[in-house]
Length: 325
Image (cartoon, rainbow, N blue to C red):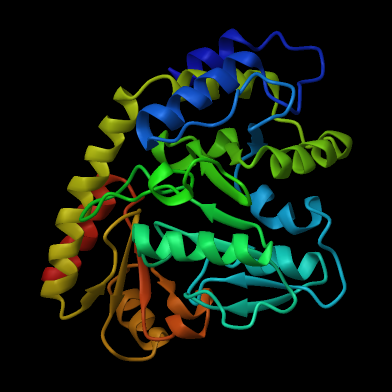
């Protein structure tokens, strides 16, 4: 379906709009409401409440810069165990990084907070109470709180909640942004289709800089995104495929003597033998299994490895056989 929409919009000689087509913004607003219970301000209004991005990674890496937070003594707060690009984005903007899973007692110098729920690499999901605490802290100190929610449709043991949901944000999205992507839910990583939504004032600041930098999602990709966001069936089909892989691989990991922590959502198993992650990596490599060392995601991950559910079924089955033989 995404491919058909992409091909159907291939005659696109003009520049695409940074704001996003009306079709895409309407589909995105519908998806947020239907799947996440999130209602954004008028998606077709002059003050944008959502815009498309070139995937989510470039947005994560550039957000401090796009918000004008460069230099000075500012600090970006990221999770203790985190996707490295949050730190990369801070470094690119000349900002310091603080790792914390709870709102800091000292807010001095903090200019941005990144949350990631469900989390990469560990699949941890923040509760509504934890999200509310961050929202209250950010608003009290005038610090934007941004939630990377790229795995939000992949809850297994719990149902992840968006930071923009009224149970968390209240009546409006002041000071809050959420990042979403079609890469995981639609298996469309190569299309580079992402979304930024939330506080219209913050979205507008990002949009105004992006359009001058030429950070434009190609028109055919915008058409395919609109088609993907309007259809739930392919998302549910892919989710079921991941669920089956997770069930098989998790059972095999436990048979092999490893413990799985968190991993209640997302595309990964956060596994440990209570040893240095590189020792576990060597054990797995001897079986022909490739995993990611937890130390890549911060010092707190040094005794875990990340095992992905993204390989083909045949490769998952091969790994299961090697772990249990």
